[in-house]
Amino acid sequence: MTYGFPELNATLNAASAILLLVGYCLIKSGRWRAHGWTMASATLVSAVFLACYLTYHILHGERSTKLSHAPHWLRTIYLFVLLPHLFLAVAMLPMIYLTLLRAYRRDWPNHRRIAPPTFWIWMYVSVSGVVVYLLLYHTALYS
Image 1 (cartoon, rainbow, N blue to C red):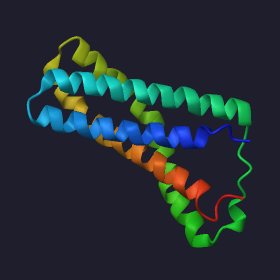
Image 2: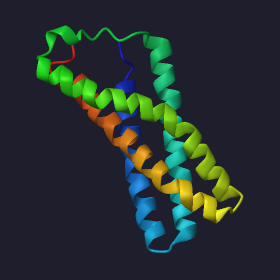
Image 3: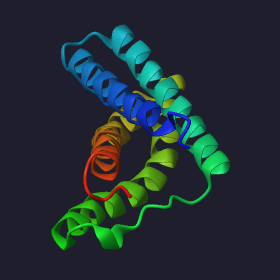
């Protein structure tokens, strides 16, 4: 039983990606306050995702997906998306913290330096999280 967590987690990842994109557009149009609120919302949504993801894995334990039943090409795509997703999901946490800290301190030169790579990594992780969900639960990978 998955308790609906995979669907919720995919939805939270998609919401995070949308908020990140809106925040990006807002900063490019010079709407700093709206950008700040939107990025704070993206952070909150991502934090809720992390809490739900951890709760799911505590309740559900290891997944019982048997990748051996899926076609080789599909397993390859899945792993090609999953591995950088996992690595970057861990790497982005201190980057998000530093980006938010520098914004909070109004250290704009250093904030501007770290914000672009943080944005692109965070965006990749959010979008690839949805792709991982689709591959796991809506293809032959799921068994």
